[in-house]
Length: 136
Image (spheres, rainbow, N blue to C red):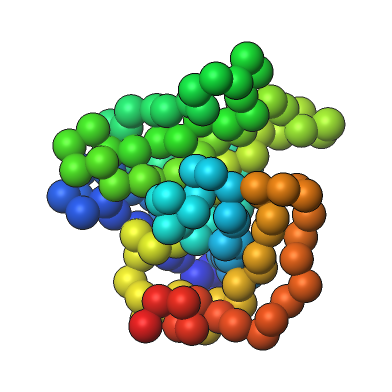
């Protein structure tokens, strides 16, 4: 049976389900992610991730052609996910969920990939840390 993770916003009105191994999660330092404090697990729309409940969206102000929209709870403002606004070359749409909305013990062992979304848009070298090192 496949692993299933579930995350809910603070008030419980919306959330996500991810089926299968989430793999490493990403800590990004872009101007949005470092403010949100999110850790992201990825897949594609209509595949292993399902969003539930009502959300509102935010697209980066001042960008003529933003790459993604952030989904958050309209009641408690919890950041639930981001959704790519451009299709990948294979026609799929990227979706990432905020792993911080799930039970901490269920994801404590997951490795962290660091991504420089602020300056270089490059993956950074692994430092061996996992979620428990950033969360606890």
